[in-house]
Length: 430
Ligand code: GLY
Ligand code: MN
Ligand code: MN
Image (tube, rainbow, N blue to C red; front, side, top):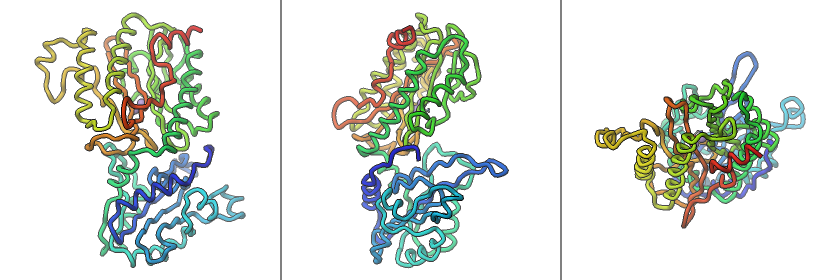
């Protein structure tokens, strides 16, 4: 791992939170991700499944966590199964956790090698009535590949048809949505690395620079700060490309007079950061560009204030829509008539602001969370309004990551990243 060891108290507490929400006489199983193949003997870099990571800190493939609070065998209340390692295996395959290290990372005392799983799991299942399985219930998940977890669930249902199956996902969404102080620190670190990347760019961007050159500068800055790199595929979109919401080609030259939309964030220790800034290629916004920029900034500042305990996210989105409507009227992009005639299902403002304002953020960029309950302190959201005007070759989105506080405005993890148009101009022209 490039990141510094995380205090195992985090994982001890996370498992306690999970146990609290389990039914009696139940066990829960969490699988790691596979290492995904490319072709020949090539593989994608490993990315741990965020749930086993959240509950154990184990950041390696071929790992299983079982939580069984009511086990009569004290040693089986929580168990890790890991890929076998030894000094000899380490020479060939590289360092993996040994049993002592696994305890130091996770706080779990009972660690077996993976080849012992079938026999030990059978004993555990014989004593349990219910089994919690970990299906992916993220509303936007859209995966065609069968994950290690999917394969495990299929096998489990065939091997143990008499057990009651329960869902881990609602529990995970609940406990992952409120961030621990240790997690907030890690998110802050990811945001600070992103900040270093942005500051590097402000003196680098000039007319003629290519979008991929900007991507390379960011990658360099992220990696030298112990990040694995981008938390999600970066969007570096100059001019009209900024109006393509998921533009990831990053292969165009940035022209004098254009604005570049940068939706980029570093990861740190698997925690994401999610930022958007818009930067004038030549160091100065035109009057019109600044008008649109400041309209988005106004919406962002107003929206952020609504991220307080008790807010219902569906109502928040409606309110932000109303604020945006006022700005689009001022900019002359929509008219009062457009609003009078609008389809309530697709209000007029959506022509220029067609995406959501906020999402949960954490171990996943679009993190899991409770969308239908009032929000609470400790939740982390992005705030990212935007205005996209293809006919003007201009797209502006501004995005920060915010922690909901017990009282008052949310804490902005990106408060030190230049945001005001004038500050960006000043830094670019120093
Ligand atoms: N970068 C993805 C998003 O802003 O949601
Ligand atoms: Mn983003
Ligand atoms: Mn976002």
